[in-house]
Image 1 (cartoon, rainbow, N blue to C red):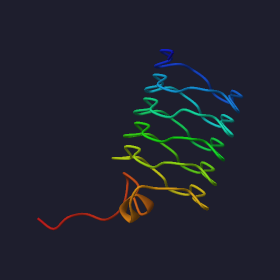
Image 2 (tube, one colour; image 1 turned 90 degrees about the horizontal axis):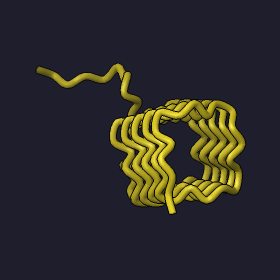
Image 3 (cartoon, rainbow, N blue to C red; image 1 turned 135 degrees about the vertical axis):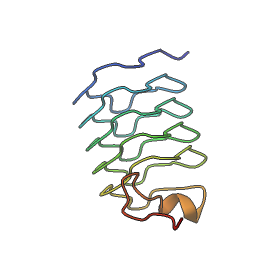
Length: 119
């Protein structure tokens, strides 16, 4: 069973160990939230603000994190295999032993990257 928490203000909330499979958290404010060991697999976190969130040991398999802000988040030992990270901001995130599907996921540039295409 999944919940619809889209556009919620969940700043600094403690969701450690929670089962959030399939939960809709689009555009939610989860800044500095504790999601240690949480299981938001297949959750929809599109555009969510996860700045400085603790996602240590979190199971984010197949989660939709497109456009999410993960600046400074702790992703130590998190599982992001098959997660959608298109446009996600991982600047300054701790990615120690984080599981990604491909090498490309590891090097996702921040949306405000100074790189630009020639044109």
